[in-house]
Image (cartoon, rainbow over all chains, first blue to last red; front, side, top):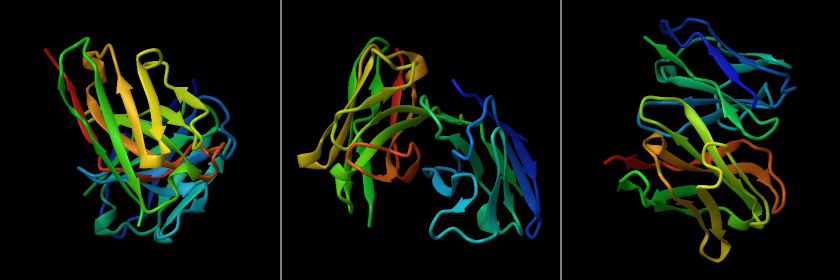
Length: 106
Length: 124
């Protein structure tokens, strides 16, 4: 199975900050890497697919980069509604696997 | 508007069985593979199973293989998860999720719409 590791597990930031989250795969997943945002008590929401493609309706302050085993999700200017947990997921092969999540807190 | 609504969660004793349902609307249900993904309270996400739009191809996580069965009824726009031999480790919110790829036979293995989830608690 492909193990996905996210770091940090949590971080504290302020509105307006630039925030970078990291996801590492135990083997290459090429560009088959997706990011989701999850707020407390709600299901995940797709933000980025294929490592860097912005899902429709997602603000442009979100961006993704990386390939192979190392990926990042960047929020260019953190907004109040961005405080949430972010999950990465590889879609290269089954079993599909997620990282443990990064919680972005105020 | 795409809507996915799970139902069937509840409290079950270890070793018991339960069937979850997911009703879909707002899209051509049989044109999309569907998934079940679970999340133990306060924990991360775990993919459980996938079923192609035509119902021909299934995949399971090792943790549920042989105990869970995914199925669908395209005439009812519904997805199911039959769960047998339940253990405490199966306690979680169960989400149904739509695969992003429009195809009756194939899938892209990621999810553009999720239901609100239904909670399964396995406890004696």
